[in-house]
Length: 145
Image 1 (cartoon, rainbow, N blue to C red):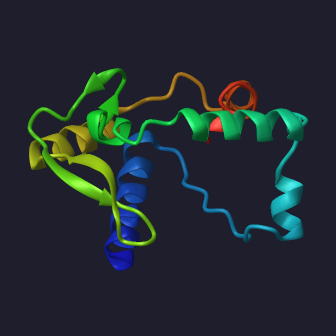
Image 2 (tube, rainbow, N blue to C red):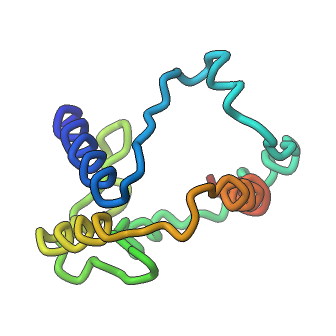
C-alpha cells in the first residue's frame, strides 16, 4: 500500500508539473524539527480551554451513524463523483468498522486526472487564504477536528 501511494504521488507530481508548468516542492524536514517550526508563521493563538470544551461537546454529541450515512467520497469543485463508486467499510486503528467510503470508479479517477492535468490556478500564492481557512478550522471547527 505504501509503495503504491508513493508511485501514485510520483505520477501525480509529474503530471501536475507537466500540466501546470509549476515545480513541485517536497518539504525536506520532519514534524517537530526546528526547520518544521520555523516554517510555521503567523499562526493564530490557541484558546486551550475553548478548544477542550468544544472537543468534549463534539464527542458527547457525535452520532457514529453519520460516518455511515455520509461516507467519504470524491468531490471536486462542488460536484459529487460518487455515483458510480463502490461503497466499502472503513476501519479504525483497532481494525473495527467505523464508517463507510465510496471508492471511485475508474472513469471517475480518469476525470480527476484530466481535471488535474488541465487545472490552471488563478493565483500562485495562497498563503493568505490558507491562514483564513486555518482561523476557521482552529476556531469554530476545532472541536470537531
